[in-house]
Image 1 (tube, helix red, strand yellow):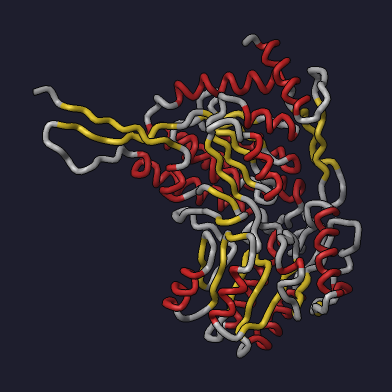
Image 2: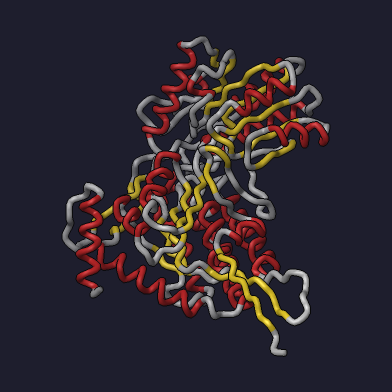
Length: 487
């Protein structure tokens, strides 16, 4: 189909999504900082012709890229990491300006990108090597791992680099081309990725960025040149992604919501548990898929744990993202903050008790992205704050009397991304972890991805896997060779 014909098809696809046809001229998206409402940047959204061109170029570039040796692909990805980290200070400041995380904390994301990318590079040779079954006389048998083709990555705003690198680097290592749509709040992050890959010598069009309206993103998902979709975001949008791909057999990886629990046993180090769980609950203003949103504490240590938890929480300083003294920044927008305020209000009306005085955090005001951290006790699972994802700086804490009670409450959720057990008994943690419906079990830590391990969710937390050796399996397909030697 000609370029004008493809463009017309895109207009039709948009109309099918309930979006009126538009002229082929830029639509502008403006990034407004949640810290103060100032404009960080403005970018034109891609139109039909630009989208068509990007997909056509990606499909063509991938055919050449897959023939590049793995050693060279690994070297390019290493150079990508070097360029990216060399520009880390500027990139970290941009993260804070775009989505509100304190500037004192964003450098950790740069280090995390390097850690994850280098882990996947180190695993690539073994993970992508042919699989050879036991030899049979007269035959040569092996399984190769073939790249899928074009991978469409839809990134998230809360950890715009950490989440995106999970799919982008292994996809490229495996021989795929990548088209990246970054979340609208953090569009600059996609451009930083592109600049670093260009500096690393990645062949042209193997990695491309498209700034897209949602309807256009759904049309990309339906395009037959896209072979895999990697999406991170809400459960509701995850369902839209699946529906958009329903008429195709493209693979889909989904990292969705979480309501991650922690269980503090009576043998735990209470100071260590409380301090780390405060960080797990309130880092990034609670805007983490694997952040701690509910805690169950053994009755024998409940009072001591609560006292330390509240003391540590009260030490936070809520303020402007670019103030180095800030330890808790604004949420990404006022709507998200008001949703959490609503959860807190509903819980208080149902009998919960708030342990944090909001007056200690004068920046916290209704109708703004600024929200004080809150600790709720006297909560139960009839309350929305203990059932639905909050994605904000609030945590509910319940007293329990046994491991079995804790396990039952931890599993009483539609989500299953991570769960943490705080104990000195590794056998108990292993036993309890085996009974929890979750993708990752932590002991004495939380809110962290070890890139050597599979990152996976169960239930409404998603499907598929990133990171580890297993992550490569979702970005390749097996191809069997059964060769009979000549007599």
